[in-house]
Image (cartoon, rainbow, N blue to C red; front, top):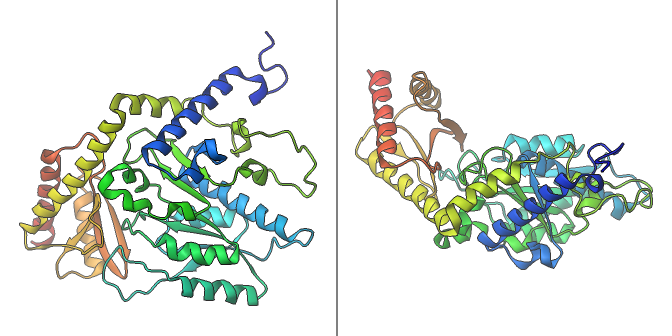
Length: 381
């Protein structure tokens, strides 16, 4: 009768919040099965799963958990000013901000720039171990590595196996950012995207990009069943020790979670079903191949080499400097007919053509290609 009396946004006093939590839990369990995640990321085996509003929220909470976990290992010595968070140079800016906001010192991992393949960023076990040891010798504490599987700039897929070996050896929390690309692992021919995922501590992928679930659906899993306790770590571990639970969503969020994120995602997924999702993703790959074929018909364009043919196609006009590529990009954008991104990787500027919408078909791709041609006519004169 006295719904929420004097409790505010409290899980125990809010039946609506309980139902939303149950829906989120079922959604994440379904997505885990869709992606064929290993047993270590399944709730029934003790894993923790959370629906965040964005990948950035997941990164920040992961950084806080990793920081607190490492501090607990060193207690009672305070190491707060010595902890390091690592990220590759192709990471999304949300990764960098999360590490900084968690009060970890940000360290970029710079792979070789010798490669001319825009999604090639090989980081070796030996190189990473040397970096960790160098920081330790300097009195620092390696704490977190956020690894990108499908970067925003180029969809690069980095080696989980190599990096996890170094992280395990030095006790570094390894998180996978696969916000864009991770959901594509449900397609049998592309399950390699999440190869060796069982070797990491936590993993994030988004539903509001290629899956089309709408904003605010970032799926997160971690092996650490005490994740909620790591987020609420205090100098006195016994204080409020039983206040938070795995079922209470407020344990995982800095602000009260939205009540309808899961509902939107579930509605979308029920309308498609597993087969519909996989068929939609296959269409994304087919449309990317179609765009590559169109580009080959105009000798003014160059499609950049990639290790994997994924639903982002990097291309540029031949013979232009990076500054001129940016001028051409501005010519493309000024009509307001299409909205598209640009990157500079390995000191190569290029435009990113993404084919990740569930509403597009070949006619749309051809129309976009013709727009690029028109812009090239205008820019080149």
